[in-house]
Amino acid sequence: MLYIARAAVQMRDDYSSDYNKGKWYYIKTVDSIEYRWRLCDDLTYEVIGGLFSDRFEALKCAKRMYVTLLYSTLWNGFSILESGCQTYEPNIYVEELDGDEDLFFKQEEYFFWTKTKRGRNLGPSVFEVEDGFEELSEYRSIPLSVTIKWPGSDLSLDNVDEYLFSYSRETQKLLNSIVLGDQADNYGMRMTIYCGLLEHLSPEEKKDLTVQEEIDCLIKHVSSSNLDKEQKDQLKNYLNRGKDVSARQKCKSLCDKYAEKQYCEYSPKQIISAAYTIRSRYAHGDEYVVEEGNPARLIKYVVLDVIKNYLREKENGSHA
Image 1 (spheres, one colour):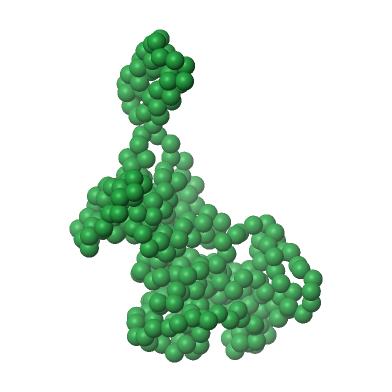
Image 2 (cartoon, one colour; image 1 turned 60 degrees about the vertical axis):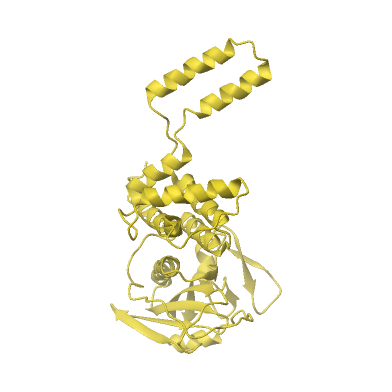
């Protein structure tokens, strides 16, 4: 048996392309592995690599291609409807095509397709074939009705064979959050998602010890005051929270470590400040209009860089 690595995402119905739907286009060949891509009728954008004699080597390739495909589509501003594999769990449902019985497989088995069983249509996967690429047409696809607009531009996948960072449950969740942010029509909600992602990756951090000591003095003063117990508790909780570095400042520190120095003419800190301003106004019900030149429009690229460098460092074992 031979194995074909595949990675796929589904584009939204406003995606356009000058290429013929359903036709495979050659990308390149590296170490005897040929890479191709195509856009399907349902706007599934898929990349394949093969042929492999070892199915686990094919799976490594599929995961690498998927990370590159998903990251690149997000970075280049393409609008994704679905990225696949929202759940990466020990037991995952797989459909038995020739019978009524449901089968359950371990994590890795979920990604392998044969003529009698399949995993999910999107995300990374490996297809079992006997001879070559042509056998992919024998696998049943999931039909969807979409509207296609022409003409448009397409994504360069010249780096599809290159390593970006490992595919994992955390990788999937982080990149899916970017997909969700991209789909938010309201800029306030978009900034809420992106800022929340940065806060999720930011470590807990306390203010200087001298500041904490001053806050402790204020807490003692409140404790000995004539306020009733409920008021005292509320004030003490508020003061205790003041020992923590603000979410905005933690995000700026995170970007100092993981983001690039410049995005167009803006620094990461300028972009974060603009994003938090929009999020704050949105949280208070302000219908804030984002001007064309607002630095907050670039926050997705800051977050993508943070995710990339955060995951790379974590893989290398240097993430605290």
